Every structure is written in structure tokens, then in C-alpha cells.
Amino acid sequence: MATADPFDIRMRFSAQLQHLNASTTAAQKAAQFALKYKDMEEDLHSCILEQLEKTSMNTRANIMYFLEHLLEMASKDRQNQYVRMMQRDIIRVVDAVCPEDGSGAANVKVVRKVLQSLMNKSILLEQTVAEIEGCLKERDTSVDAGFSSPANGDDASRPKNGNGTTNSHRLDKRQIEQRIEEDRERHKRMRESMWAVPGTIEEEAMKLLEETSDLGEDDHILGREEREEYQREDASPIWSSKSRKTTQRRQQSRKKRRCMSRVAGIFLALLTNDASRGVNKGGKSA
Image (cartoon, rainbow, N blue to C red; front, top):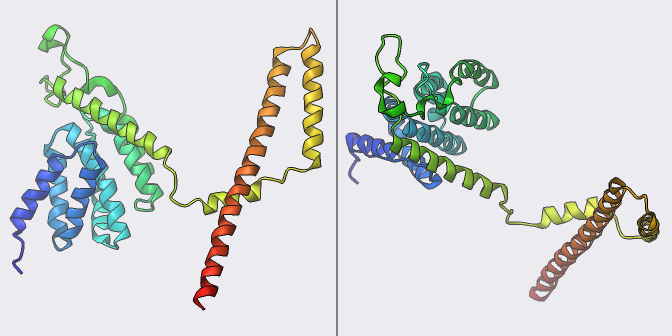
């Protein structure tokens, strides 16, 4: 089997980093590529740092999201070398994604989000994230500076650095539109993940069953009392809207509990049927 050319691997990995976007698939593909060639992890790590320091601010933000996938996958696969190198160079990464000159102010939220995620996954220490947060507060000013356009096309309106030269890191219109589209795509995926339904329902069914009480005589008595109170207050000419809303909320809460109780009963019946079928099959096979 022929050995892969290290230079070719580096070039291919660099191309993947340069073409990252809001797609989770692209980030995972690049992470899998890095994990596949773990014998070149130091070289590929230096490649990540190189791309962070020479690409556009949009690409740097995408690489920051990619690092979250890479470190999570490396941690699960016990490839801790990537994790250790990133822990060592995390300050350098942050400085590249949102530099001190304010050119990457729009990336501050990206850095915060990724660092928080890595801390929650025990990849970064809480103390390290707190120290970086102190630096980010100073860079989180004039977030819109990189997205603003010069008035009437006058270059004199552009902000200048300490040497009196024009800031060369300003995003052009195409980059701004690209960033807006990528952020919109990420927000869409985030909303989708919030509504993701787990594949198994057994635990949820048992939890509903444990938390929901059976419908007994006390529930019927309470229901009749609430109905009588509702009818009595409805007939009164001085019934406030507040008391009406309170009664309606009580009724809705009661209906919800009854519905949950019925759902839990259905789930339990399904689980019981599945268990009995398994026992019957075992008896027949014996």
C-alpha cells in the first residue's frame, strides 16, 4: 500500500478549511480528514493556525466552528493530541479569529459560543475560558465596524489605524452578504436541533407515568367545583377579566394533566404488549 504524500495531504486539508461554510457536513468532513491522518496531526494543526492567520474573517469564523467538531470527535476517539495542541494554542486561535485591532469584532460571539461549548464538554478549563472572556470584552466594541460601508464611497470616511492608514480588514459587500446567509443557516439548524425528537420513547413514557397521577374521585370533585365556580362567576356582572383568565388557566392545566395521564397509559400499554410478546416468543422457541 502506497504511503500518502504529506505535502498532498496538507494541500487537501488546507483546501477543505478554505471552503468551509455554515454546513455541518463540511465541518465534520474536514474533522474526519484530520482524524484519518493522525500520524500528521502536528502538521495539520499548524495548517489550521496558518489558515486562521491568512484567510478572511468569515472563513476564520467557519474554522472556529470546525474546531468545535474536531475537538469533540478527537476527544471521543481518544485522539487527545489534537486536544492538547489546541489547549496550548487557544489564545493564538482567539487572537486570529477576533484580533485586537477590532477587525474581527463580528466574530466575538462566535468565539464565545465555541469556547462555552468546549468548556461544557470538559475540553477547555473554566479558568482558561474566563481569562479569554476578559480579553474578549475589550474587543466586543463597535461590532458593526467591520460591516459598515463608507458614506458616498468616500475613502476618507473609513476608520484608520494608529499609523493613519486605512483598515485593510474591512469586509466588502459580498463578504457581508455571505456572512448574513451563513448566520441565517446556522440559526435555522439550531432551531431544528431544539425540536429534535429522541429515537426512543420508553424513558419519556415512564417519566410521564411516574409524574402523572391517576384520575380519581378527587379529580372529578375538583372539576365539578371549578365548573360551578366558572358558571357562578360567568353569571356575575362584575367578574373581572383577571379572574376569568385565572379560571381558564386552571381548566387548561387540568386538561393537560388528564391528557398526559392518558398518553402515559397508552405508552405503558404499548410497553407491556411488547414485553408480553417477547415472553411468548421465548416460550415458543423453548
